[in-house]
Image 1: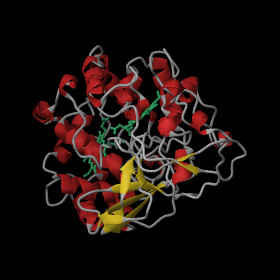
Image 2: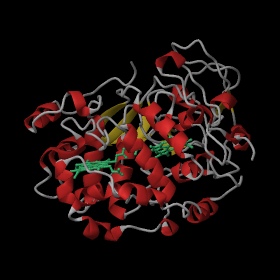
Image 3: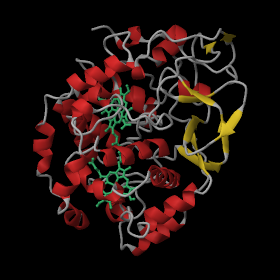
Image 4: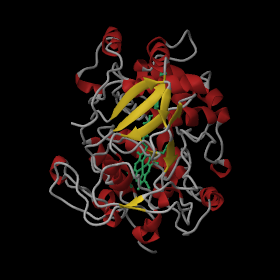
Length: 419
Ligand code: HEC
Ligand code: HEC
């Protein structure tokens, strides 16, 4: 198998003329040669269709995960109540064979066929505060991603840094060496290890469908899964997103790496019913700099609407999230932290729970939560949850439900993403 980096089409990497990185040359408008999603299509010049085909043929083998987790002890008593509804809730589940990426491009990004005028980033790249340098080719080598700040985390297990045989890429390439990830991937920093491990099994077994991860887990060994889970769980959760309500957003496009970027020229457009997440600094995001976060633009009114659902259950339309996710939504036992995670990611998960693409043993607890939600509700909830401060697992601060309102009442705050 060829190295992953060999498959990247670096000549067509998208770069934005506007961001002020010195030494860039403008290129002509060009159409990328490949539509590889996340550049992770082993067969080279794959089309979206070929990719879906691979998914169909992919994760069929293992229902091992289902068996293993079917008997997981549910530690939260409220969850036990919901379990009573399981047989009923699972009806909506789809089989892996039928799965395809939902057609909501703002949340489930598809690379734009025509990429805008771009700049090449040639020569060694740097990020503020790091003494290291990498070329863009090195930065985009998903089997050997950059580690700008090695002192900020425990040594990476091999699978996190370099991946493994059989198409497993280095986890740190998409999730960053901080675990904070990009909006098109996921934030794993400080999320419970048991939860991460379960997700890897669910992806592998086809009980959870999503971009890239079914491919990443197909040949992932149990030992690598455990090491990666422990390592990401030990990372520090950090504020990484700034959530901003607005009527208008910059015009944008989806680049080669499935990241949304502002179009050069500075034009804007109505936000509509979308969340638009952009890097706070384009060049630093393209360097996979773990110190430079994102801004999530959300429609006006989303935060108040989302808060209502999250804190009260919206008059029975859903269930108060803190019951299971912990008072400040920073996780409780094996229920994951969601506060301060990317709103676009959160929306995708709510959508997947509802359409049945995510139906692992514990995921069934979310079925009742989303059953009556519209896409607009999900958008508002995702915006609000994304605006909450991330923190450590709840063990130290759990308390009576009364604390919930106190911690959530603080509400969204306009926080700086970079520290
Ligand atoms: C090519 C990019 C890529 C690589 C490499 C990658 N991931 Fe992911 N990962 C993703 C994307 C994209 C998602 C989000 C899928 C979705 O939208 O549901 C994700 C989601 C996840 C999730 C779910 C997070 C949650 O909160 O439920 C876990 C866990 C995860 N990845 C672990 C890993 C581990 C461990 C590795 C290394 C073995 C890895 N990933 C490598 C792209 C990647
Ligand atoms: C009855 C318990 C329960 C309630 C109430 C609940 N959740 Fe969950 N939630 C879970 C469990 C358990 C998981 C993990 C599922 C899995 O392992 O796949 C989860 C997972 C999620 C995820 C996926 C996280 C990730 O990183 O991928 C999101 C997003 C989420 N919940 C949002 C919410 C929101 C928003 C609310 C309130 C409106 C809510 N949940 C209420 C139990 C609950």
